[in-house]
Amino acid sequence: MKESTLYCPSCEVERSFRFEEREQEYDVRGESIAVVVPVWMCPVCGDTIVDAEFGDPIEKAYEEYRRRKGLLSPTEIQEIRSRWGLSQAAFAALLGMSQATINRYEQGSLQQEKEDELIRACANRNHMADLLRRRGDVLSERQRHAAEAAIEGARPAATWAAIVNAMPSEVSKRSGFRAFDYNRYVAVVAWLCGNVALVTQTKLYKLLFYTDYLCFKEYTRSLTGALYLRMPYGPVPVGFGTLRTQMEEDEYVSVDEATFQNGNFGEVFRPGRKVEQIETMLDENELRVLRFVRDTLGGLTPSDISDRSHRESAWKDTPPRHVISYEKATELSFSLPE
Image (cartoon, rainbow, N blue to C red; front, side, top):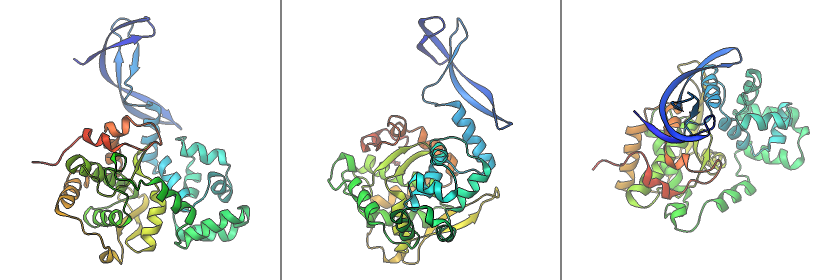
């Protein structure tokens, strides 16, 4: 039996708690959601403490509700907005919502289904172009110009500069002993898109993270030099939205709308028309890492691979929205086979 010494706030004394997993029901908008919650139980008073690594059970219930209803995750909402270089206030104005509403949704509050549809539609470039034509006058000239540039596939100079500044140029542990290299980055993205079935945006985030950190763990050098942020649904590459825009403009990747087996709509990443023009050649060790990540994680659903990343100490030990240190790669949950 798993036990741990904890302080019981009811008994006001430390004692040995017993570990249990309990199924708890939560009412989310009239729908019952069962969540298996790991808890520590005081053997004297019976009070329980939710295991610290599990997080907030309500958030888990919200995640399950979103999955059932096909709603966007907070990270996906933020990515759609960031893709067009819009602030929360500007995005909200275009949609006829308040900034506070968009902020709540990006922070984890559960969105209404009708508003989810409005936000989801903005993932489509043509829809955003039409929205700007019809409602662009609610934005400042600078905001509208930035959004139009993103829609046309142009690299927003200020945003790109911020990415370059955020990505390390030094060769250090912070960068996985490799300066960020756009060509290597697109080579890895293109390989994953061409060798893993059904690559969605969320799944691509996690595959990139595992590829870079496993490469560092095995060969003391990351594959791309990219930095990763600790976001609510797992690690996310710094500046992914801007990098995605550039990769699409260069035609190294193609992003297409698709209907999944559950009937939901989403985006799928595939190799682009000019993928053969990518200059970087990956060596055999790097390809070995990519093949292992593909074979180990490629068959997982976006939800499953996101859940797995939450169990990594690299994610658990990093404060929200902070860069995940490559030093945590040594604690990755798997290694290359001998």
